[in-house]
Length: 129
Image 1 (tube, rainbow, N blue to C red):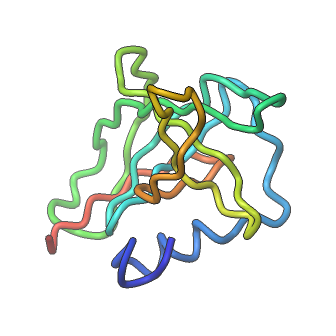
Image 2: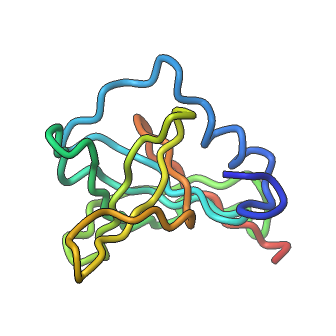
């Protein structure tokens, strides 16, 4: 994710590039969807080693703290089997980049929207936007 054009968060930018030493993706592993300034929890629901992509599905996140509109946020996560599925592929830079399936060719096409961090679930809601 490029800072200033694909994300407005320095943390999300850094998370998208922190891929050295990350675990190999496996079904059931936690992940974090990285957007402009927010982060949303997800679960890896498919790993396709032949075509080198993973599919993630956003989780439910329920806030459990009582800190109000602050940056100190705690959440409880549960899987959401009805959520939209997103396809990610690791590119040469090491980043996980979202892809779409071209309906005419069936090939994966890079879409450069939300970034991804695998290995842990995280939720952050930016109240300043």
